[in-house]
Length: 429
Image 1 (cartoon, helix red, strand yellow):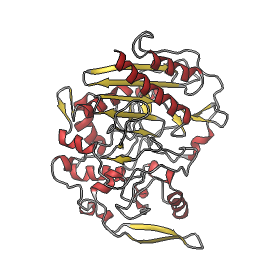
Image 2 (cartoon, rainbow, N blue to C red):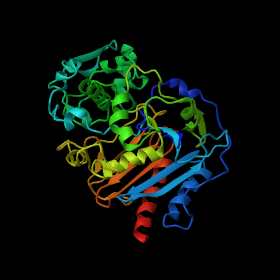
Image 3 (cartoon, rainbow, N blue to C red):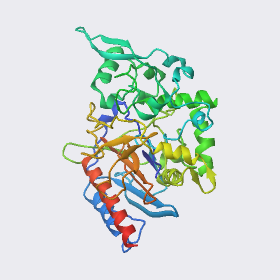
Image 4 (cartoon, rainbow, N blue to C red):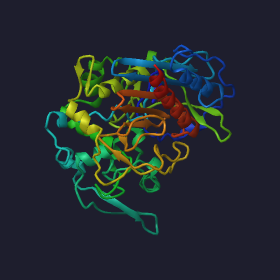
């Protein structure tokens, strides 16, 4: 997520493919100023301390964390700097890239809500280009890809649950090799040629995180007759008052966007000139938004409120219930093995726990190690942005940084401290 200072959090930050980002200049000094937006003596003191410690130790340049319950926002914390080379501090109003959080994307396609589409309907009926999917079986001796017809059609359920066979090259050696062998662009380049990628397995055979949500974006456009930018704005952002969120960023918003950093081998942070394409060939259903943490938590509060926020109904309660219910049957969410270490580490949100997938969230089947209830749902964004919604305790939390590679061990530890501190504070309040 790209943080725009209301910290514009760019959601679900896709794994971006611009390799040139690796050549950014090194920032040596860590920020001295620390600012938290909560009383140091309140019930969430441990969260304030953890955020401040993360900045002073060089874990992050800056971090924003927010939490809300059914009554409203219960915690806001913003600590550190948007850019280590400047004076501007992080705030909950600042901008961030929500690239990897892929958190706004879980909104159901309009056809499902309006009963124009069925979850198990072949999507070639909407997008003819999905009519003859091919599965990548491997490569011959010369390095040429070997393809075969898929055994079954791709349905909307497959796409929403990451069981379609369409995967991300960040976590697929074979798709990364296919892109190199054929010259097709990566999905993060926002070029339509990326949709020519083959399936890695037959639809419905297993779970692997991938570009299914990007295809769902195309389906939304086909069914609604609007671009995804306009559809999101009219049907999600404006009704929810998310004035600082969108695919396209203004000059004023760009000035408030937090700098992206990369963790170096020695643990230091190096600035990256990162930005999502502002003249994309398509708007992505899987990532690429700019937004602020406050905007994003408004979205999460809508989901916590069963599809309604402040009188605006975005989704039916039945739809939200389906979104947080296991939709992959006997399949399980698998750990992600990185094939692009500069962009992501290996990923497993709940080691040792069976995980399921809804429409389109990770579901922990047992109580989480840091406080959330069994049946909570959430996910993350590539720039080490994380969120969860706990329907049992009726609380939601989100934490935003702008740091690569994804699933940074130190940031994951900080996220756990935030969650533990939040539930501890709720228990003592």
